[in-house]
Amino acid sequence: MQTRRNRTNYAMTLLPPLESLVPEDHKLRRLGRVLDLSFVHDVVKDRYCQTNGRPSIDPEVVIRLFLLQALEGLSSVRELMRQVQVNLAYRWFIGYELDESLPDHSSLSRALDRFGDEIFGELFARSVKQCQSSGLIEGKVLYVDATTIRADLDMYRVGKPDSPDPDARFGRFPDEKMRPGYKQQTVVDGRSRVVVGLSVKPANESDTSDFVETVDATCRSLGFYPEALCADAGYSSGKNCAKLLSRGIRLISPPPRPITYTGRDQFTTEDFLYDTHRDEFTCPAGHKLRYLNTERWRGRRQYRARPSACGPCPLKPRCTRSDRRQLKVTRYHSALIRLRADSQTESFKRLYRSRAPVIEGVFAEAKQWHGLGRAWRRGLCKMKVQSLLVATVLNFKRLMALVHGHFGLLVHVYRLLKAVLASWRRATASP
Image 1: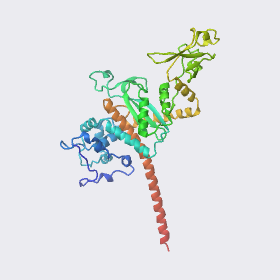
Image 2 (image 1 turned 135 degrees about the horizontal axis):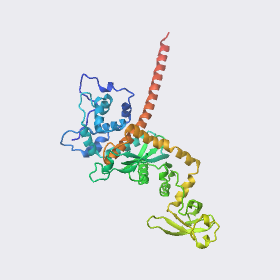
Image 3 (image 1 turned 90 degrees about the horizontal axis):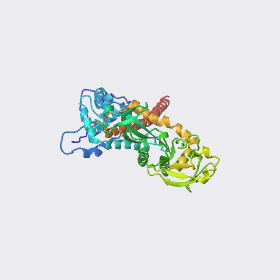
């Protein structure tokens, strides 16, 4: 049966109230100023029987405990409850007095199974909205990248029928070693480093498998598309560039170097001029290569010159060893040409230089301070919960810094006005 704790009316004891023991500048007090969990009871009511059964842990307390775990980067619920047992600020944050018994760790695990990842997705979405309404999110430039997270699983049990984590898969980690894990794709605002979108998948999937879908979902939640999207070289395909251009987004990602199957010492595709209107290439000697067909298995478009043009051509030794030159390109070749041209501009280079400090800094913060380096629990759903919790905490930290800065300014102004008023009173009271 779902219950709701009263966080204001505590039983009278001889112990001092926790409210008086937590400093005003404590980080949990600052978190409390930006945290709004009034929606939790309405969202989870369908997951509880409202008429009978034993009283449950207050769902808001459950959310607060898991936020504490993400804030402090604690690796297990057992360790979390051990810390709450002895930490006055933690008890105050969840609304438990010193003489009250804390929830058992097993009850929290069952509550997590009951909630699923939808509740935490709603919590994350609300943190983004709060940041947006506070003016933290500029949204002109977004940064996208993926990071691998080590699964809580022995490598010899990956993909086995009896694996305790059936969703974890092998992926390549920064040290170039293959380990079981997950991959989190993250979208970050360029100005404030607020996490505005994310997705989680097994580590064996490519970084770009759900790239555009994640960007679309993020932009729908924000209500607009950015001017530019910065990503590393793994995202710089013609397909991604074309899809983003169709949405009015400029892709800032180093394009791949042009190569040719004829050899490195010969002309590449970039040496041929492409006419998008006529759908034909012009070689360095001025001859036309027209569309021939499209490969079935890879979908590449083939263009071919006439033997009569290539045979007597003086540039043929640098072009092809066959009787005529062929080109094979994707259907997004025009977008790739545009990306390569854009990559030579100063604005492109300046934006790309800002990529690593923003997105890599967010990953470093999440892993070093909030436990994103290793999965706390097993299964894709619970990995999503962990990622959403950590992202929510990062966003609340940005809000806390903003609100604390405003709060400090108000205190300073108040003290200044108080001093001025005291001086005026002394001046008027003197004969």
